[in-house]
Image (tube, rainbow, N blue to C red):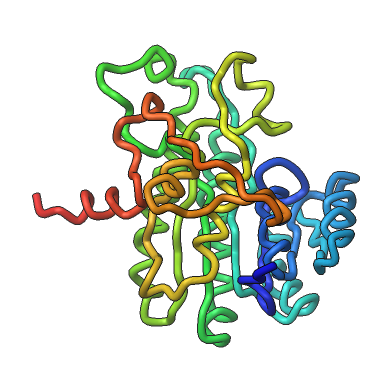
Length: 290
């Protein structure tokens, strides 16, 4: 099997379950050493054991991302445990959906912290390691809600339950595009990968109606992998969506262990008509002169 990431170390936040664990498994299948960041739990221990059972190296970094002190120590711990970080995947988070007028201030603070502040601080912390190694890759997990609401407004948009979460993801998108420009000369690629619709995970199940059309997590994990091995001059500043990007670029999608090729699946056009196909259309539109 090809091992695109042999010799590389990837730090993945929110890696004990769901999307984060799927990404960790896919990167491990390509030879990466995985640093799994999540709060201490049986799920984190099981995730490490599961990846290690495949022959990959998996190291738990039990961390509460809500604690500034613990976040500040992550880069040092990564250097001590694995010699540094080549790939950073900012995935961890906890969303609260509620009508805007009823959203507690604590929930606002938590979402802005986990989805925007922590990715900024972790990117800042690992950049010196990446620059010293001569290259690096940062991938932020975004959301289709970062795109402007569709007009005429949908019932969901008018309900307003996701607007703070969406604002945090929109801020993360702008941070991604700005950091990509700032780190291009250092050969550090910075990209955002988002689900094209929704992915069923332990955290999302309670929020999704049973009949809601969802996508397989493998398409997102493969798109993340695609952002983790090419030079920045070839692939940086992209806003890639998990089903749109493979379909538009012909990227083969594999099972999380890399052994099985999955069928090409046309993306859900109904979800948002403004979804970038190849990942670079949105930044190009932003750059258009007024």
